[in-house]
Image (cartoon, rainbow, N blue to C red; front, side, top):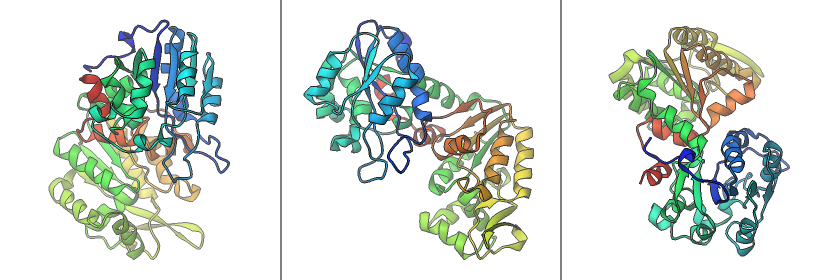
Length: 396
């Protein structure tokens, strides 16, 4: 990969700053509602502690003003349960108390420092050399002997705790970062035919992926669903109904036109839904394309689409999923996600983008994929041929 990893790092007795991404859903009481991202980093933290490291762990939670903008005290308690080594919590990030907590560590001990986004520097983006001059990096780097970035899910952001430390201390990729890059940078080497299933409500992202993988010849077929599929249906000339069309244009006024352009150029490789499911009087009702327009928004794909897409996956060499086919949070409209994603596990090799896609798998209990990414935006950046600031500074 051209970047240093934990295999290159001498750990014993050294103080290591470790950036992880444990930004997690919280319940109404502000407690962890899903600890999947904490589990993802256990391997990296456990290895460093086993090798005698003294770890200062950095992470963020939520965004300023959001419901999930909270301290990391609960995260520290959960990590302490998951690890075979002790991890404490400090309510400062780069204060004198925080630096003292790091200095007091013994080999095989860790401290989780406070939410990095409690400080304004961290939720803005700067070039790496400017990030290296921020208060957070300037004050913490003297107490670090090395820095490990394991936060793949935040690797697309040029923020101080992500790209600042490599300018001041020897820096390495953690095991999560290493594994994600090994998989997502080798899409071109995966078995064919290669099928991308693009759904969800982030239409602009899905359109960007579709254009990129079709133009670069990475995709043999693109299966569309969710709000993205509705946009392609409208672009194909189907009157999907005002509620569905409004939902699309409210998110992206040019989505239908962009989808139409893709259909014109790559229509033989793009599949659109054959039927959709809407809600009427509290019940799921499925409508074929010929029965549209509908007086309610399409919330899922129907049984015909599920069967057709499942058939494609039966002979697929690689399945790559980004965005759920329906409103999976509502059991009435989780059927498309359950059936299509379940079918994708039968491909020879399967990859799942992070974010909402991974969340839908956990909620519905769907397993059997070869790789489930921890990062939505970062995975998307790689799938569309982009680069990641966090990786570039490690490479440099």
